[in-house]
Length: 186
Image (cartoon, rainbow, N blue to C red; front, side, top):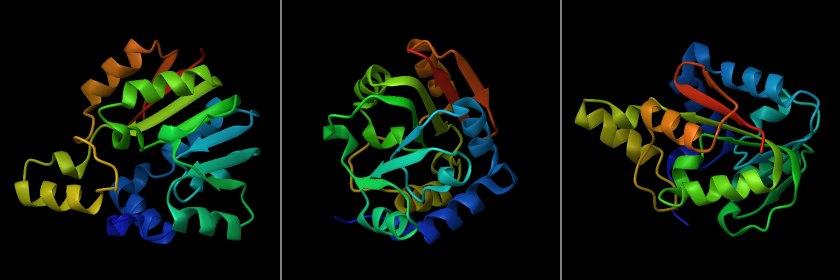
C-alpha cells in the first residue's frame, strides 16, 4: 500500500495536524468530548488516537498498520479494520474525524451505516483545506501530502458539509473554524 508521508507514522500525522490547525487544534477534541459526555466512544479511522486523551471510555479502529501498532503500544484498545467492509457492532457514540472524504463517492453509504450502528454519531470534517487553496502549487502539494491509498475525488467545502449534515438530519452542527462537527442522534 502506498500512502503519503503524513500517514507514515502517528507523530508525523500529529505534527501535520498541529501545523494545519494551529490555535484551533484542540477545539475539535474538546467539542467531541463534550458531546460524547460519559458514553463509550468508538473512534472510526482513529489515526493517532488523540481523541483518547479527551474521553474516558475509548476504543478505536483504523486501517493503517503503523497507527494501530503505535496505539497498541500505548495500551489503547485499537483494531486494524477496513471500515468500508466492516460489519460494525452497535456503539454508544461513534466518532469519525477528518476521514469521511476518503470514502468519496460512497461517503453517504458509510454515514447510513454509522447511523444504523450508533446511539450517537459525531462527524468532524475539515471544510477548509490547503488542497482547496487558490495557488495551484500549494493545492497540488497539499493534495499529494494527504493522498491515501483509497481512491477519492477530493475534499468537502463547508457549504457541502452543511448540506450533507442537514441531509442526514444532524441535531447540531458546530463550526470550530476549519472543521464542521455534526452531532446525529438516530
